Length: 139
Image (cartoon, helix red, strand yellow):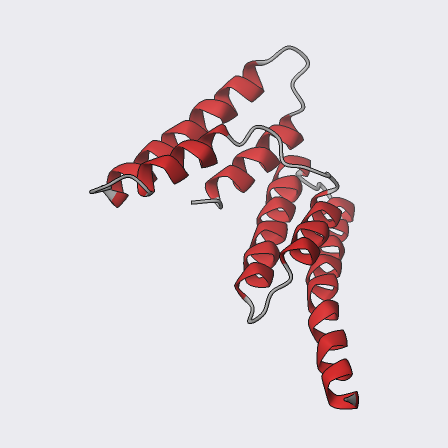
């Protein structure tokens, strides 16, 4: 029984450690001399996305814990517009799906969303870069 509790605690800690690692890397990036905040935001989004994917892919993954860790890592409770991901899922789940075409359409959707974000009034370029990186990592 003790062994099971230890393994369970280790499994729960893994997500927290990944999130902590992303935050540590993000803090180091942002406090570096001549830091590029857009790049820091994009790198953090990619780190959080990778940690989320690893969490969900783990044996007996607790999807609720993975989602909570991802929200904590990104600083959001829910992803923004998931239109690109929704369209990608529809494409790849269609009968006789052409995966190359689905991936290309997803990349195009992410680029379009990125351009629209950057072109919006009072656009936050760091947020745009982070959202773009997160979008690209969903495919």
